[in-house]
Image (cartoon, rainbow, N blue to C red; front, side, top):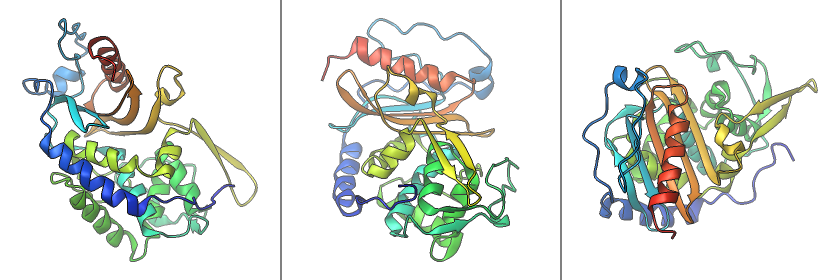
Length: 306
């Protein structure tokens, strides 16, 4: 039923799970050597063809920062500039979803889009016009799956205490997860002041994966919302890999603003291992997808099956 409140929120089990995961991440070193510095934005975007990875070596990742974490063992399989602080664009919306779910505000409650939800930073467009009313659950679905900015803004604005309290809750949750180099300033990710590291975002993905709603909404290939006048708006997932039969994806979120390049975080099962993949500052149009595929190929060909 559209907008129905999920029966399972995952709130209290998550606190115990997150504590164990964060401790493990702190203790486990990277299994592969950190590459020697990211390429500059111009060099990465310049179109130089990636060279094949050396035999038994790490994958040739073109994103400026990346990390691959084995979920069960919480072991770092690959890292590149994983502690570089970078803008994260709409990856921000994962924390938006965590705060919305933790708040316990009813999913079926109607929330209207207002002038406050207009993008005054990037001036992006939206099919959610001022006055559109959707349930909180529908807003969360399109914010996560299709990266709908006005939906994310409305979720933050309708939080008890308003947007300021919502952002404070985002930063408090980041601190609780041990995301020490992360800072949020809005719920959309449109500001380049929303920053984090690949290492910190791995923590966020591990936590977010504990919420069934986030897993479901971020991996939906498409979703239609019904407006008050009966019209349907069809939205599609911003990560085309969720439609790819060769991938087994349990959580997905993309991001893009000019300062951050194209970003991607995923939880996936590869070579019988559950892993978290974080890719930041991917400057080519298809670089993040290419990097994800290179990671999968590397894992399937180089690593023993778990």
